[in-house]
Amino acid sequence: MSTTEQRVAVVTGAARGIGAATAVRLAAEGRAVAVLDLDEAACADTVEKITAAGGRALAVGCDVSDSAQVDSAVARIADALGAPVILVNNAGVLRDNLLFKMSDSDWDTVMNVHLRGAFLMSRACQKHMVDARFGRIVNLSSSSALGNRGQANYAAAKAGMQGLTKTLAKELGKFGITANSVAPGFIATEMTAATAARVGMSFEDFSAAAATQIPVQRVGEPEDVAHAIAFFTGEQAGYVSGQVMYVAGGPLN
Ligand code: NAP
Image (cartoon, rainbow, N blue to C red):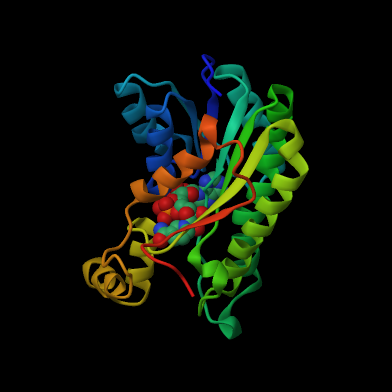
């Protein structure tokens, strides 16, 4: 199917990293993009990249774990850009710790940003998708969904993203809406740089060590993930739904 209408996409956590690369990529594919992150001012660089290339973008400050903020952000996006019918639930945080040291707040923060955030954003945007009889939802999972030492909270949230994705695919398919999940392995961003700092390694050494364990022998770049997300959000991807695509430089056990 082709359309002459400009679809509106929302990318959460789009001030930097995978979210920023995704926002830029979707804009390059002709989408108008709401660049959403905790701090509206932090979205300026991403918006500038899009507009400098001739695209349409809007910076939106919003905590995705806050129901009222999500509802007003989605209403603002619909007013300013048009009905949001493409949603990339990318905002994320880490609060890594071994189980015996993990605090209640470490657990709740990770669950709230990833899972509650994806739930709230999906619920707010689906109304627009149902009305349009078209929608694309992509939820960021992770290779950690398969289990990862020091990440009980994050692994559970990222496995939860896969269950959420499959359920949205089943509930919303009859309205022309697909839901898929992209599960990155090691991607060079501030998130992995923070992990390197936490374990006392330079990012260069940390990335080089990780690359030796990856079949393609390199770590991923945000654009590698943006490419997979662009596929799932494409006009022609309407028969691909409820899937999890690992973007990890090789298969995972
Ligand atoms: P990142 O560089 O840390 O960027 C995450 C962005 O999300 C930040 O701009 C952050 O804003 C924002 N954010 C955090 N909490 C938020 C909230 N409550 N509401 C709105 N925005 C919020 O992370 P990344 O590496 O690009 O990762 C993006 C996604 O991919 C995450 O879901 C992550 O779990 C997933 N992932 C990453 C990797 C990897 O290797 N990098 C691997 C697998 C999966 P602040 O800076 O203000 O906190």
